[in-house]
Length: 195
Image (cartoon, rainbow, N blue to C red; front, side, top):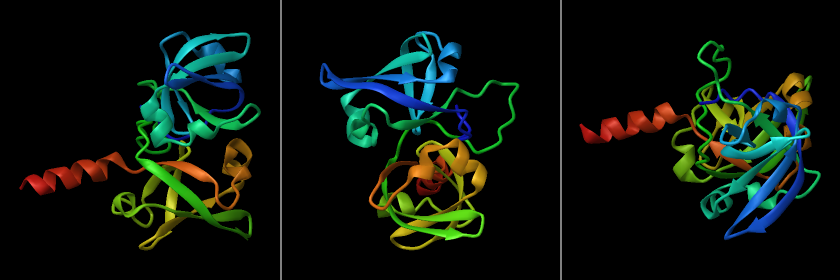
């Protein structure tokens, strides 16, 4: 389990096709804390470290991961948001993030608003049904509060701290982002449908 609070901004060293999937190699400070088999959140996708050392770690991407997320588009030099799993003694500062991408969104609007940057993200209806104003959503693994939502999109406000610590500072119109909706909303919906 993760919180959506980015701990490190890594850099893709290599992204190469491999056996129907792909292999990533990422340079990051947090690589020293990873051992083979450990989980790590990369742009909101929970991956398993295959190797680590010399300030880098590797991870394999399945065909499912490539089809559901934006990781297929990563190129060497790309910045990625990284988070290590929550330890039982840690504070849950963001919200519950599983690292299971529900779908992709597209940045459709960006505007400066004082210290913050307002970002509009188009999303499919099957995801927007779980998005509520003042609720939480993970965008590329970053826990954010939804400021507004309508039938085709939602908006989030990026404060200076988020802009400094995450790759969302580089968001441009048309950029595809990984979305994970609040898992509690999905469970509630399933339970309500049973009754």
